[in-house]
Image (spheres, rainbow, N blue to C red):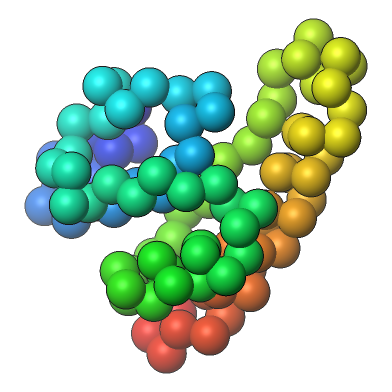
Length: 98
């Protein structure tokens, strides 16, 4: 992922939270200790991981945007894209450093 590589190039530690419903762990060039397999729809679990990481920044890239899949399965993409985003914002707003 270009985003990860760019931040790593500048010396930042990168943590990834990904449910891997559309991704592949092999493409994420980060240590296993920096990877958390979790669906962002799981608000409680997401809050726990966000607090454990205690990041300075959160960059939200989780979305289902493949139109044929969205047309065939309208509920799942909507749930992830809307509820998941709300869960990320709720977890982020409780951190002291953001």
